[in-house]
Image (cartoon, rainbow, N blue to C red; front, side, top):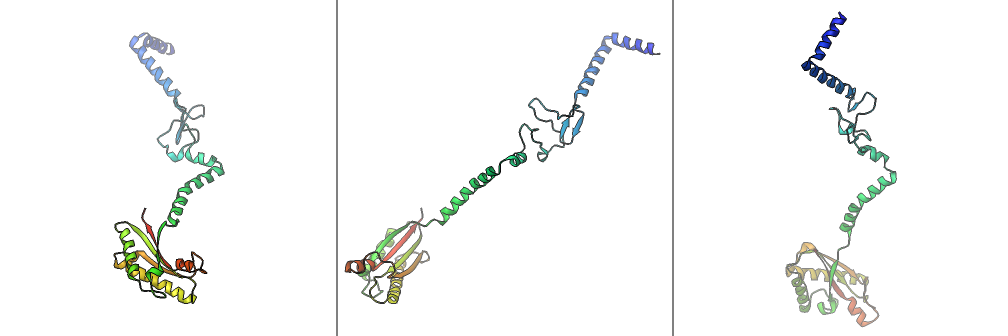
Length: 231
């Protein structure tokens, strides 16, 4: 029986068409035995127990592979999560610092003091002594200032009243406030936006010259208009 089977196989082997079929079958079997033996969920594992790799050295993925399942060294480079874990603590802190710099810079820019254009009106030429009513000369000066900024975008304006140290300090405080308000009213009358104007009186607390001289006292009696333009 075995002899007959051998003869049959020999006959098949001597038959040229059959020989081609056997050769193809043998090649197929050879290919199958060389394929990875096991699919370890996300990657194929070969008969040697090692991950099967392509010609680029990357592990061969199965259809179950997901980015979250990436194994360090299998993708040609370490996964992002693994790389972050291996990163020194100092490096992470440096990265956080660098990321915070633009935010900090923006905060500083927002909190930066505005750049004011300061114009000064002499109280001696704009008001009567001890009074808070603008003179004709003072009104003309305010109108001229408003005209200078016509058509220009203004963020805000601050009108400050100042006096010398002659007389009562409380009176000087009230006088400085009233004069600042008088200048604001005249500016609004000439077209300025009242919502952008703030008034404040400093009385005799901010001298710019020596109050012991007549010339110094004249300089200290003033109204300053500070204008912050849009850049």
